[in-house]
Image 1 (cartoon, rainbow, N blue to C red):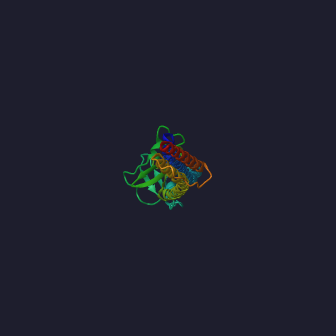
Image 2: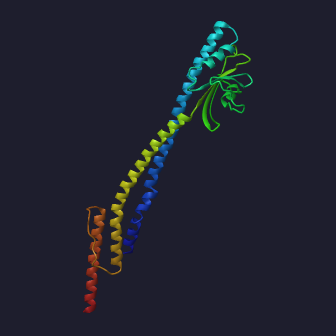
Length: 264
């Protein structure tokens, strides 16, 4: 009887074990999917933006080099014309940066603030110059930005112009990333709720019958040998019900024999 009650008590912890083990693993997997998807989406979108900037930068650099090759004059005037007539100014801002790191002219026509950060330009002119290109994502004035600075070749750069800088706001991109991540998160939450609902029904179909078995075993332990379990399914739970009923029948017969012996 003690073994039976111990087994029933152990089965009563099925829900807790499932929550800690199976459901916990499923939850961890879904969270991992959301995190990996978020990182992948950010990398994809930011990579596309950077590629687009490099495409525009190569076009502008080709124009400047072609002008310097054809005319041989100082390129400052041509750079100003390119910046002022920049056709993609609705997508990004083009800046001409001088040797001293000051912005000489912008495609928007507005002078940048004195405290404007330019980590990309610092990367381009740093000790690890490489091909003279610096790219960075940073936050300035509560706005996410991506900037690329491309140094002009030393043979065509002037004292006034040293590099071309391209700045793109990431607000719209971040909004799109947020939408995609939210959709994936909602899908994972829906999957989690579906698993929780179906599994709860399955666990309930086990826990409820086992609860009745536990109650019946408790009544048998208290001396009520006439109680019986109703077998609902032909499975392990049903076999347990048959076992409990057989045990109750044997205990009832033993009790009857004991009472008859005492009466005799």
